[in-house]
Length: 110
Image (cartoon, rainbow, N blue to C red):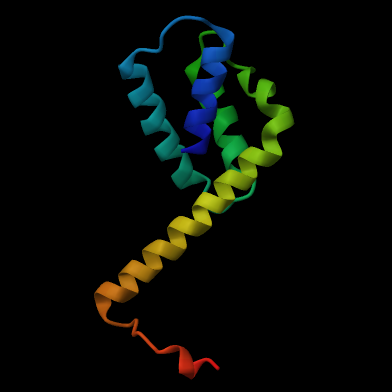
């Protein structure tokens, strides 16, 4: 998600043309597919996915990821934060649905 948004920012910064809805859908789909390949690299995954999106899109945007090179740290931080939050909320929801999570009062922790 971070890579797709960053790539759309790169496209908008390099050209003043509108992005067709079909391109936005294909960028999102490619970002989703790339994220499965980069699951083992949560740190640098967002910037790597941005580079792969730029190379795959073509149309003169092959080096578009260099625009966001100074912001790579923040892209990585946001991507890692989203990964951790999605994993924690999904594991909580799964435990709650499966019945493995139980409520305890505060007096058990004091």
